Length: 460
Picture 1 (cartoon, helix red, strand yellow):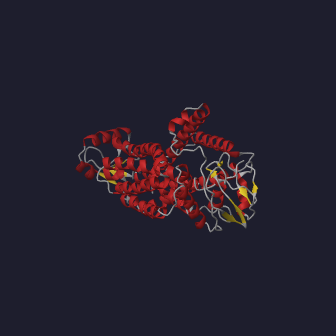
Picture 2: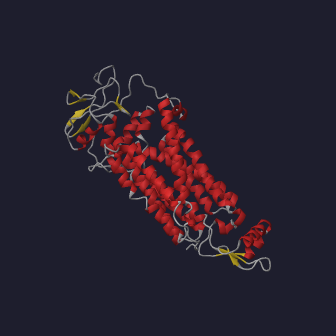
Picture 3: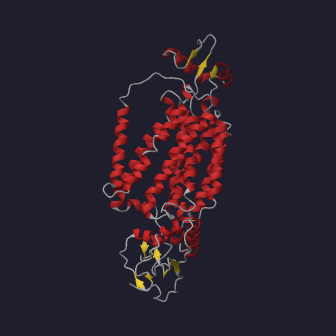
């Protein structure tokens, strides 16, 4: 091991913790090659585990300080669970993201309606008409003028939606699903592009730009003059929502120690579930789809203002060779978590270049990465298909659409503490937890097929 003072390097600044003194030089994945940390005149062995950071937090400074341990020191509070200033933001941010993701569940719901065609068809409800009458009604819809639609079709004014706004019923009801597909098509584009952009321009900058544009386009949804405008704006919302969600998740975890990634990710998902229930409550209280869309984004605007105070990712700054900015970001995180004052210096290895870059293509170049990537892509595809397929079709379950939507979110909550517990157990771990939940979810989906069907009931 080589003393970090040697090799012609300028001496690093000292840090102080618990009465001890030391020098830091480390990389994003641990101590850098050929560099050792000397604490109180003794070189600590490089084989020390990351969990020695907890000894540092407890006031026992006998462990080696690596880059990751500095993250533990700065990003964890006295109870080891106080996540910088960023932790309160992801919970609120997920509430907003959830509302946008399932927006179409209420905004695209079809209110009960009836028609009166005066001599062509008798007055019938869409829930009890015969096949012939329904077919005649659909044929009439194809040739009906806008004035005729307003004159002969009457919606239950219990709530409004894009279906009642633009008469998306009968042969045109597919447009509701198209609008939903536009959103998730945008998500597909956003997650691909925003990841690369955040690698080049920074996590915080891309996150805030995406978040801001997300709110702008989402508000535009509420003022859509036509269905076509609504569908295009939903696509743009999907691009921004999917992209900034990905960057926000990365930004959060890059400000935490690796041992707490599972907990941080699970907390975000938990509040996503709460966000679905919150959206159902807002929908129950606000029956106008336009007003509901605007109110949802007021919450997003508040969260956006809070996110302005989030520090840039220290890990990203370090990877770009911007060491002083990375140090300032770490100091800010430590300050917000009421940590003891400490000073340290980050160093780069001798043979290191910030010009090295990678792309999504690298996931497919190596056999092991290729296999794991394809497996995870398939898992995400299936999970998204089933999850959103069920959540966005709560209106087909019968009963209250608001209660159905709220329950679809609340039912998830018990799963996340259980997931965190199982992941942290050595006898179970991540792989078995994933397999177990996938198996149980698939089994439950198969059992649903054998449940008895009920007659349609009006939404309330």
